[in-house]
Length: 263
Length: 247
Image (cartoon, rainbow over all chains, first blue to last red; front, top):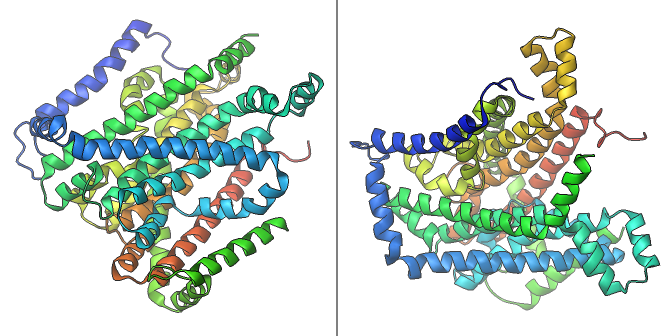
């Protein structure tokens, strides 16, 4: 549905490329002679980006941050799928814990960080633990919902074919729930990223989040924009990587959906 | 029933842990309850709750007002859709906390800063979902509208908007908890007014019983938001297949 069928495809692709380039060029030129303390010239920001992140603070700040993000997310993902599966298979356990999980999930994720800091201090392990605990619920709930939504006929057929319990789980149930699990993983990744930054901003001395907030507090605006830029790029790349994994794992699902639509 | 047992067991476990360990930050459920009751009796607490809701509501409302029309335009016009694709795809996975330092620098630790961050956090999913919904509108319905002599505005209002409303509903469902989360982020890390800042102050001052109470309050606020979100969605989309009961 659209009103502009007359525009040719190559032109649209060209526009798709030109607009972002034009935006960056506009930022560069508009800010070139800026003496505004909040909006330094983009040239300075790029210069500071280069000076700070490539590679002076790479091992002291970028690596710990990104390491926490990756490790925390992977642990949260694995635990989310495992607990989600356990809750889906064992109904009494689910009934027992579901209200608790729901309440915990309702707490805005960053609000629990001060609690962990108060209990356990500012150490790096605390930051990692916070990421894991904050990022787990979306995957857990998605796994639980995905497994519960499986067509009962699929379950019956898998029983008829005499698959063992383990085979049913790994070869039928989990793949069937995978599209939903991946949407949960996407939210978990977003939460891991938010909590990574938040936990660094809340009193850590290391990490990209801590450095960026410090730059803001000391009015080093070019450093701050360089930090914002780096965080943006990390968030974008992390999401892109998860998307690539999803498309690989769910190639069968996307393909099946495509062919179903073309009937 | 079993769920209630789960809550009781968790509270007992929390109580036992608090009893057997020592440390200023270890607060028992009873102490949390007392702190909660004390907070309920102070006007400042209610002012913070009100402020949090007002800030979240303002950012959310602004995001709807801007996001839904923008999403419809982007979904409807191929030209706009392609022109905005790369910038939107880049900004979509970037949460408000990333741009927070720059927003604090420009607006200061103010209510405006919090409202802007909430707006940013909510408007992205709203634009994206609305545009997706518009793209999925059945072309036959649009052609039918055309052959009935509907103008472009009427088609947008009477066919495209209702068809896309399930997606817009999803967008609002995603954005509502986001509004609350970002309101807390802006207060906790950005010094904006509301419960987030109170949490930061309680942590810095070592008022741990109040800190626990605030976290519990935010949990109940989150549940309330979930409840409201389900009600509104159910009311707006009662005609939609996924909400109809007893078909």
